[in-house]
Amino acid sequence: MDLYEKQARVYPAIVGTIIPIIITSAFVFTFLSKELSFWIMILARIGTIIPIALIYAALAYWMRQQFIDISKHLFQYTLFKQDETEMPTTQLLLWSSPKRKSSQDIKAIAKKIKKDFNITLLTEEQERENPSEAKKTIVDAVGKIREVTRENKNLQQYNRIFGFCRNYLGACVCSVIIIILALIINLCFSLGFTSLLVTALIIQILLGVLAFMTLRTKGYDYARALFNAYTTDTYDKH
Image 1: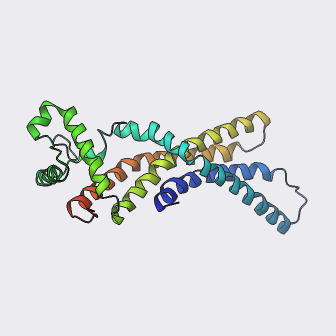
Image 2 (image 1 turned 30 degrees about the vertical axis):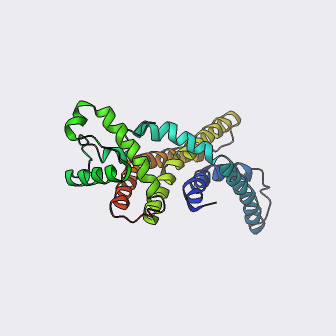
Image 3 (image 1 turned 60 degrees about the vertical axis):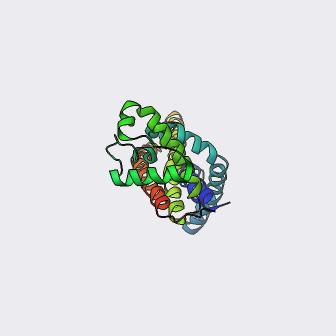
């Protein structure tokens, strides 16, 4: 398992199960005898949490690809579109984008792209006439840039951070569903966990909102790092 697979795919899947682990453990604790001594109760709870955590971790590892798919379809494609024409890597090179790089940078990157890949980015005037073609041309060029900068260590770090943030959202959605199901079971059987579950639901939703708000920022951080790596020749050309 490489570093990206571990930090950007496995870790967010596992982190997303923390609240369900706490809730499941709290449910199981209700079946422990109240007559147990203090230390025996502590040991019993530890003995309960560990297997529950291991089970959830195994499920998270197994479902990590499902979390990624959920994240992409519900969040990444919502923000950046599936064809990547609204990705930060595209927006930074669009003349019409308010978040674009400076004119000098765009011209320098366009010149290098033409030299390296024989891809001609549209001029500012051409972009106004055909914005769709301008975006698609940038997307094609960015794909080539990713290939030649793949070994850049600094860029890999930004890529893992973006991947973690995005993939955590998929795990977060599944966690919210689990909490809602637990809340329904709790209400049906009057188990007395309403306050805990409502609090857990609010916390999980807030964490998801925070991750979603951060996703765009992390995307732009990665995009800037990508072009910096490309223009400073820190990648292995061979």
